[in-house]
Length: 84
Image 1 (cartoon, rainbow, N blue to C red):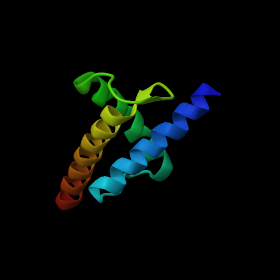
Image 2: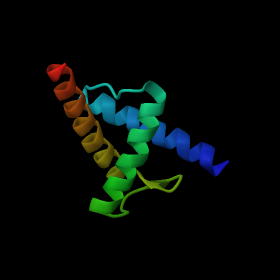
Image 3: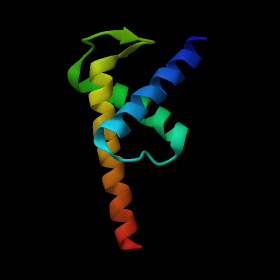
Image 4: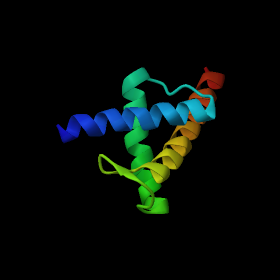
């Protein structure tokens, strides 16, 4: 059950990051979950575990990390489209 909860929270974090940046995460729901997980890891690594914790994620660093991930992925996707 905790894995399911982590997937849901990771998806919400990735969706929020895409919403806050105004950019789509490629891959739909799966892309949101991946962006949320990678963003939570990156945010925890850079900012630590401060703020409210939900399903093992420190929410504020996770959202900030997911925003960084979404911006990087959208930049990479845009540069790949301009080359093709």
